[in-house]
Image (spheres, rainbow, N blue to C red):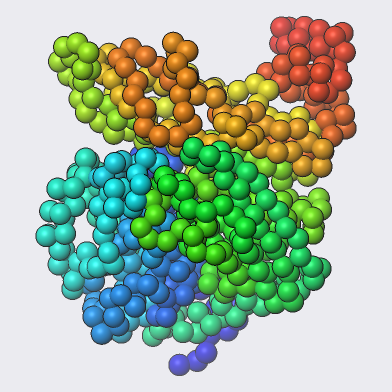
Length: 569
């Protein structure tokens, strides 16, 4: 067979990326959990016969995709090549060999062409419930956090393991939803397989060896060229965040070599007693993501483009928690890894990275049930509702931070309609939070206000998963901090930023989600941008005068223009 040309290989590479994107979109369309179909908390990718990731979907989160880059090799090792058959499907939610906690189910499907194994498709989805204590930080070990599925066969030679499904159904609160998600994961891999075999027929390929070599060689070379252009130096960074009961500090030391960047988390706080610990695979995923965004954003993610970013951390640190540490909310620590890395990188490449943002997602899960303080009316139900929300992103050197946008996770904020459709929860208020973005030459992104309750006749527990209550996002190059997280009941009762908390019938939870920090001195912000922010309600008159130096007369002029319906800024 004639060796394909470079142009043909490039076309195949682009085709693989489109295949895995279709794979991901199929998962979005067929998943049962709102976390997948509404928030996009998923990943999808294609791998060669050695388990090396060749392409990833654009849809998805870096924590899933970059962690899943290591997962397929674990599947091959655990299943054994001699036990890999056409029609097989493999599954796990192992936090240390998957993507970091039990709520992520990863499925891997071997792909055969003309009777020979040519590669694998893999996908991951966050499920709303996996049993145990539920999605939260309250557990003292991973054994309490839910049902554990070791790497095993979901199907062998096309036959689903019904015993496995009965075990799953018997151990979770939402059995139909979870089993539906498992079949959605299997289906999206199958779609990837069909599109891949179509491509192979079209290009006359018997295997993926040639295109794999082309992709990995070019990605490795391009990434090494980016690294080689950097100064050979090193720098340290750190940040402190709330933790569960006591603050935790993340420390990192970056060393730029000619052919790699080493990220070392020595000095980071130790494992916590509660479930905010992070397996190394997840911390590594976000450290690599941060560096790729800053140094080589245009190079597609695959095994070779990730390989030069080496990440180490001593066992027993909160970014390298080992079994059986509780890890349900590993994202809280993992999502702060990029800002910690950027604290160091800013000292090496000033003017490149953004200010700190909200960091971790502002998630919460509500467990609703009929009221227990009085007879519940007919029609009350039990339900688990998980919703994903975001604070503000940090300002960038030349651009304001994005409002209510998740960085680094990239997960979408869930619409109110989808959240309320999932169960008897009511979102009474959801709007941008004025003055929450840090002041600066570039303003930090705004957080949100949310007001959460339940339909008549219901009480609920809320699993809070918030940070930045006591440690706001820090500005860069003179920028101001973002606003802290606030959480309380509508009767004034104080609430904690993390953990399961009871909300009685008729009461609501009042949330102020954190803002991103500013970049540069506020005095250097262009006057037209300050006027625009005031007119749009992003900042108050008080902040416009105190932080940005507007006069009272200027404020009055802007507000008069707003009342008259005139464009400002």
